[in-house]
Length: 366
Ligand code: ADP
Ligand code: MG
Image (cartoon, rainbow, N blue to C red):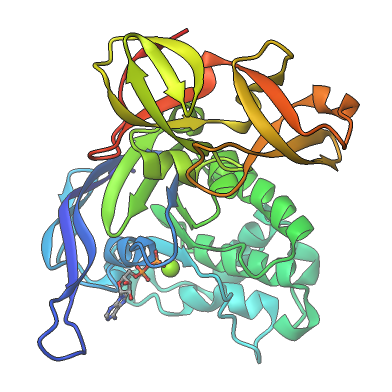
């Protein structure tokens, strides 16, 4: 099922007197395609949970509309929207077995929809098989690991065969390895069921790895929608560029002058299609290659070997922050006592942003 948000806005009254309302979601317009997994990504407090709660009907929109396919569901109560939700804290009933926890949403069906015990058990087993916990049906939540508990929560969300699955930071309470495993599991379940899924996270790597489509938001405002690689390669503004990628993109004070891109004293690339101006020059860590005749000189602070990656930690007078990071395998050979290093740059991994509004400046770099 397709979900359309049409100029959706949610304001909360401010508890402090004489302060303006909190605009948690601001004029959100977006179409989520049928059968896809959409990652809703943004820093804490940017309004991600509010978007989910508006879609499932736990919150009422201040302005705007929500459509499920062509149906306007803006004023339909949550229980009739056919939405399954998984939260960060699994919210299982501690005194019920796994089976009873999964069956619970089915107990509320009334009238013609009312199910027999046998039907409910069959449906619960089906959902449990999907998340591979069908061996654990008789246990209580306290007898399960965090990952298993989260699977029970997912099974419980799926048992009603919802039209939409919403997941609000479902992996945050799991340790690193389990997070990785459960995220692949969610991807598999989504592919198998083809259920339209919205996955909320503040973790860019998680969003990149799991999503068909990423929606980036900041301060209640939608920033960019696109495939993960596309958003990484062509961020629409400096915020999105900085938010995606580990290590993060390196940002420098730059200047375009007479077809040259200058970073401090270094003339690093030639540029076409940009008028002379000060710019933010953002360079991905993987853009750097050590080269004795490279155009960019940096002060070497250290070399860190982290498994497969070797990162050069360095300084540059035009840096926005304190340090920069370059990921380059050639750094294995670097001597620790070298003071300066020179880099050549991959122009595809260098991005320019306006100093005035931080929007991306389209241009040709060579
Ligand atoms: P996220 O899930 O991205 O961390 P939320 O959607 O929870 O963000 O919150 C977005 C903004 O709305 C925050 O500034 C938060 O403090 C505010 N907010 C959320 N719920 C309420 C509420 N019930 N009353 C007042 N402000 C709220
Ligand atoms: Mg949240």
